[in-house]
Image (cartoon, rainbow, N blue to C red; front, side, top):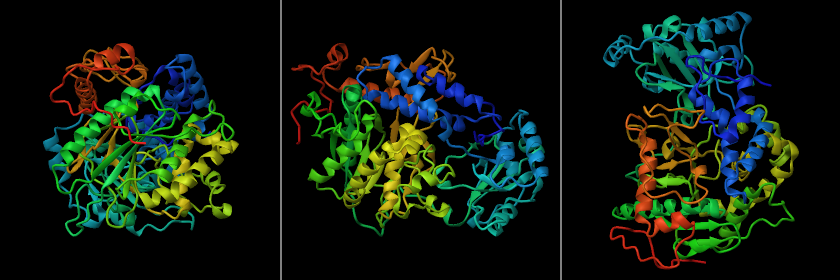
Amino acid sequence: MKPFHTSSSQGIGLGNVKPQQVITIAVCLATIVTLVSLNELQTLIASSDKAADHAAYLPTHGDWRTVEQIAERAVQHVEHLPTRTHHGNSVFAVNAGTEKDQQAGQQQTIKQQQILKPKPATEVMKESSDYPPAPKECNAMEFTELWGDVVKWGSSFHTNTPGECCEACLKHTPAKHSAHKCNVWVWCGIKESCGGQYRECWLKHLVHPRATKPAREGPEVGWTSGIVGPDAEEHGTDEQDPADKKVRKFHIITTAQGDLVHWQTRVHYYWYLKQKEECDKSPTCEMGGFTRLLHSGTPDDLVDEIPTFVAQPLPESVVPHEYYPVLNRPYALLQWVQQAKITEEYVMMSEPDHIFLRPLPNFMKKDDRPAAFPFFYIEPHKDENIPIIAKFVPGGSLSRSDAETIAPMGNSPTFLSMTQMKQVIPLWQNMSVAIFKDKEANEKWGWVQEMYAFTVSLFVIGVRHVDLILHMMAQPPWDSRMAMGPGRPYYILHYTYGNDYNAEGKHTPGKFGFWRFDKRTYAKPPPRRLGDPPDKMQNDMVRALISHINEATENIPCWDEYYKTGQIAATCDEKLPNSIYPTAKRHQP
């Protein structure tokens, strides 16, 4: 098995392991030969967590035996788990260099395991200003370490300033025609923080660097990093271009299978209503209507309170439902695209476990490029994925440069024009089935295969650029702040991971905590007023998750009865004067 490219500058971080993930994590850990960062751990559990998400489509209502079976299947796909590199793990870097460099990389791995006591932030700031700043085109980010595949080793390459390191990246020429060019530079300029790596300059290549969160950032990080060349372009913007007067209204379409996302859908719709009400106060509001896309084939009790389109499931003659019912999603969207009559020109695809934190803008701007949230575990450019993708593109071949234009995304959360929807959805439907029936692709991509099918379908219809917006969505507990940085607030909270903390507020990934929230605990609705996390817990996004669920359940009439029975009451007399949740029938066919 190919070794993992990981961080050696941090201690090992165990993921939020749930019972259904134990087997997968055990196999994954057996492959790790260096220390792993928390970011990297998300990669390790991505497939098993995706599998657990899809367990909601099975008729067992959370039976652990079924979930364990899903985990066993996830183990079969462990080899597709993606890898990343940064400076400390150079022994496994792409373009590995000389044997001497490899030995140096091993030495750096050992050196980086030493824990250095960080200086006060004021001292660090002063020390960082002792050298001249890098030129503007270097896009320098202080106290930040970026990922990347190494193209020039810092263990044997030092510069006096970050600008010199950046210049080396700009002038870098690959040794081979097919080798990577430098688009990321990383320089260590704070002596105490850097230790033996002081003034090392690492040149790297990272596909979609603006769509990849840093390996580390904060005043304790001695590294300054930058992105250069065309890849330095910022993706998307929250603000309307003053020169562009067009208001791009978008329709939200949320796919849902049935009972196990029933309560999540109600919470999701409450927050759509709340943010839409706020958005409508602005003349440039871009949030439009809402449709729940129910792909069970049968109307349910939510059609009376949430605008719903009932789609038929994929015929069993195409794919037996017990094997991969998630293929119902592209088939349902195909039916909706063919029959929908909406006034908006644009569409945002969403899911029931998305909570809208604030009014959403349309992230598609002047040239109508699609916009989406990037998922780190979708890696079309990787060597092992290119020949598989080639099976599904015209001509049967795919160059590395073309593969790098395929976005690391799925269908949600994603913004497209309705014209693009009509182009890509029919192809996505057919490609999803083709990938499912292809033994190699099915085994390689496992529970994320319909995500690969979607982004490859965009490529096939000619889309070569997607604006990948990292701050479109947060995923607690791994995202802890309400914003990625100044001017980049999170807009969607995706509660796909479990959240465990001890009584002192310390994150306890890998075991059930004194306090925990995991959506999979609630096959039926949760009670009103979920308990708050421990007082000392320092994760604002987890607190926001609980407070947003609590606000929704407090303001959806007769939730207490719904919690007890799992059914919406036939009649509801509870009066909630401040509730915006509908009580009248609002079904739209």
